Image 1: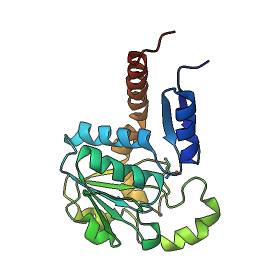
Image 2 (image 1 turned 135 degrees about the vertical axis):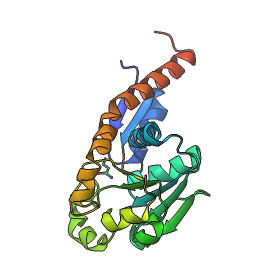
Image 3 (image 1 turned 30 degrees about the horizontal axis):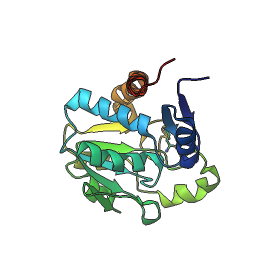
Image 4 (image 1 turned 120 degrees about the vertical axis):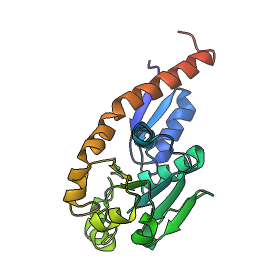
Length: 209
Ligand code: NVA
């Protein structure tokens, strides 16, 4: 009865099973494993401000094993940029590719960055680990010192919601609020483009009403 579905849930398998059994265009609007709609929006925002992301140095600070960290790893391969994941060992990315460097020291990672990116320390579904995570992520924060190590024109992006004083300081969030809220606003046209692309491809595959 529908032409497609947008699913925001926890298990990646639920989205993949829905796509396989329905045969419909199925958009992952966030799972525990991936956040592809957000990553496309993030890259659009970067490219509108700074040009092609190809060959650039992107630094992800924080929970590299979360959906955003993993989607950055996939994007680094597809869009051919360098990704440095700065995360505590227990939260380091479990996936990688030739464009990805895994690092436990945020200061080493941040040097010469074109883009500094972070996400919450406590993703959806991890709330019962909040106290432990807040301890373990100490130091994995975008702050004045970290930003000073990046290139002078480095962008700071955040997928929001942001927790001031945790993964990003209040001052760095506020100083970069214009681009971060532009990034949030870019979700709409990016998601419209994904729908147009998928429905067009689906109709081109022989579908008729
Ligand atoms: N890693 C975050 C992304 C929020 C847009 C979460 O899953 O809660």
